Length: 185
Image 1 (cartoon, rainbow, N blue to C red):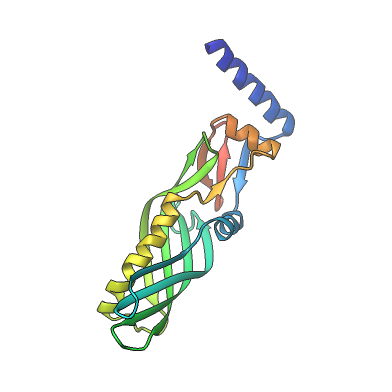
Image 2 (cartoon, one colour; image 1 turned 135 degrees about the horizontal axis):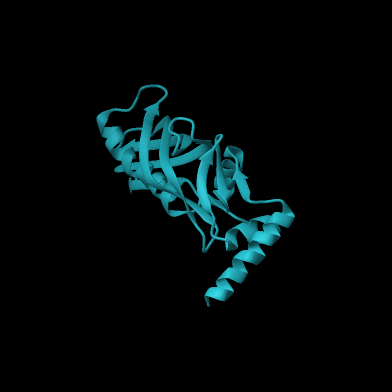
């Protein structure tokens, strides 16, 4: 068994050396595109015509290692529609920022965000009363939950470089505002 593991590492190392790859970088734009294409950011809470809020993400942007060297920040411009009792619906433009620590799951080649924090929760027209904030907060929390439960990036097994890195069980580091999956330290 140990002999087979050594052979596996030798083959992976040789293949990576031949392909010129000992690491793979994931840019902020790569992660932003992946999230736009693969994660649903629309949530509803409450009971319609009583107390109801629907929150959807319109624009999403990822920043890696800019505010905190070990964290990824996700900025989301969202629209929310809130209805309380028989009052007219209120449209809100929310600015959200979440930050989290990226983790890599070697078996699946996926990157997840863990230790998620809500860093910013603002409304452009300052219409967030305590009641509205209390109603919207669960929907915002569900958006954060989606960020922590679904991968924010996945290596593509159909691409040789990514498949080789995935099989080698590399480590994930933040360097130069990119996530870098490294085979060797």
